Image (cartoon, helix red, strand yellow):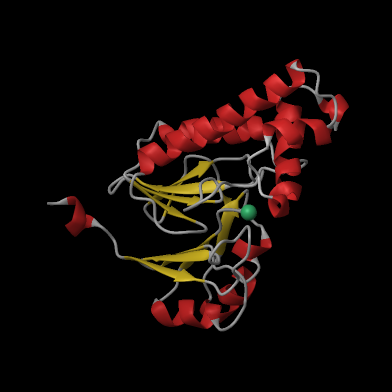
Length: 236
Ligand SMILES: [Zn+2]
């Protein structure tokens, strides 16, 4: 049997909540009778999900509002239980044909869902379809995030269906690119520190020189995550 014929049909429904961090909006995936990340209760989004499938299970990659705030309402509409990390799901467990992988970093409770039959990873907010993911302390932890990326890389995924942005078909190189991006940024930060930079502002100036002005507040959060990883909390 070919891979394609064994593939359960996956439908993407993007919520109408676009923004700098949500990109085009939160992607809700309907995988058979499973809904991954119902997203917010906005603009008829939950009704569209409910009309697409006979929803039996609601899975959450994590509990941030842009992924999870509509979950309780969708559960009420469909009688489907909500499953999330620490709530009936633990690391490595199989749920409705998908393996749950605890992948903290962006959020402590973050799960990716892995379909080994097709090599598909539902990545939530571990990897986005474009741009990068916010790892913002105190919830975000860059050391955990890097470990999670390496874990996913070791699966050699064929394709990634992200929480935000378009489907990723070059999944392996995207995962490697994500790891490299953080490593390169960390090298720039270490160089800035070695050159005597001793404040958030001065490190930002040299290590994030390519960052557009309107993205600097996000860069500052990302920098803090690096400084914690480097043991330089004295600069925060
Ligand atoms: Zn999130």
